[in-house]
Length: 393
Image (cartoon, rainbow, N blue to C red):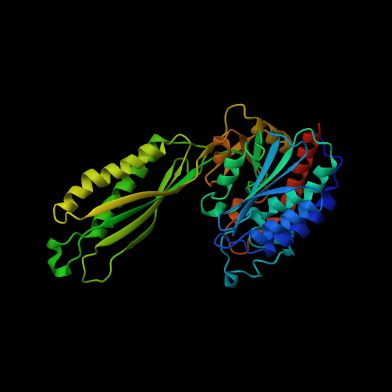
C-alpha cells in the first residue's frame, strides 16, 4: 500500500492548526462539548461533508457522525472522543487550553488523549473527500468517554437505523501507533453499609458500619488474590484482572458508632472474566456472611451494592479484518494488549471488527503538561493516508 497522493508535510501543518482549535475548547467531561462539535461540523461542511449529531436530551452534549464516500453501510469508522480530564492551571507550566509547540512536541490538555488523533482525522477529511472512495470512511466523535464511554452508546444504538454501520472501527486512543487487539474493561461498584448509631461507650448496642465494611474489604482482597491465580493473561501489565478499593466514606464523630459507610471499588476485567458471576460473589458475602450478624443487633441494618458503570473488555476475534487492516496500514506484524479501556468492546459487541491504534502514549494521558510528539502526528497521518489509498482501491 502507498500514499503517494498525499503531502504529509502540508497535512502536518493543517493538523497543527486544527489541534490548536480543538485544545482551546475546554471539553472537560463535566462541561459541554457543543462549541467543539459546532466547530467540527462547520469545518466539515466547508469541505462538502455533512454531519449527523446525536445530542443528549438537554442539548448540552452531542456525538457527531460524518461519512465520506459511498453513502452506505460498511467501510471504516475512525472513532475518537471529544472530552478530556480536568486540568488545574497551577499544575501546568503553560496554559492547558492553549496549544504550545516546543521541543518537537505539542503541549496541551487532550493532545495525547485524544485530540491529536481527532485533529489528524479532520486534517485528512478534505483529502478523503477528493478521492473516489469505494469504501466509505466514517468520522465518529463521542462525548464523556472519560467517565465511562457514555456518549458512544447512543451513537452505536443508531447505527443500522438512521446512521451507517461501519464494518471496521479503528479507535484512535494513544498506542504509539502500535496495533492493540485487547484491553481490560473497568467495572465499578458502590457498597453502602447501614448499621445503627450509638454512643461509643455503648458499642454493644450499635452496629458499626465501618467495621463491617472492613470485613467486606478483606473479602475483596481475597477475591483479587483469586483473580490473579484463576485468570492469568501475560499480554497485560499487570498480567491478571485487578480489583481495587478506590474510595471509603463513613463516620461522623470519634464518639459515635458510625451508622453509615460507603465503599467504592472497581475491577479491571479481562474478556475471560464473567462479571455477573463476580457480582453475585460480592452480594452473596454481604447477604449471607455480614448481614445476619448486623441484623442480629439491628434488624434495620442493610448493605446495598450497586453496579454503577461498566465498559466491556476487548479481545479481537480470530482473523479480525480490523487487525489485519491496521497491521497493513502501520506496516507492523505484532499486536499488543493494554490495561486501559476504550470504546472498542462496545463497537465489537455491536458487530464491528474493531482495533485500537492511535498517536501518542498513554503515559502522557491525564498528566499535567500533557504532550504528544510531532513524530507521532506524522506517523498517524501516514497511517490515515494509507487508509485513504486502501479505501479508494
